[in-house]
Image (cartoon, rainbow, N blue to C red; front, side, top):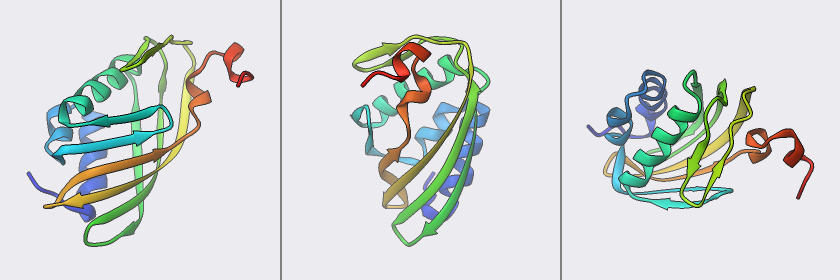
Length: 139
């Protein structure tokens, strides 16, 4: 299923909130690249692992995506992810232990599209929200 920038935010948020990983994967190109402050991940299988890790760590997670710039092949949006950090977040290079608290992560994302599928996502958020209180002052 191709989608393009105009429909992407609604379809992606709805799929995430339903925990429908296959529907999320259908929105991205097979060469999808994801980049955030914790690193870069490439391909649909990396996305699958990341989304499953988020769903496992935040079983009650809910996301709201709000687009603010949409062009033929670009999308910029702001978002809010809420949930309870109730299980470890397993990332490719580390495991962040759960702290059991509710979180509210505000973030921004920029997408590039190819053939009406997202091929690149750059995400900007404060990773300290995920860290236990003792680590939040470190760094």
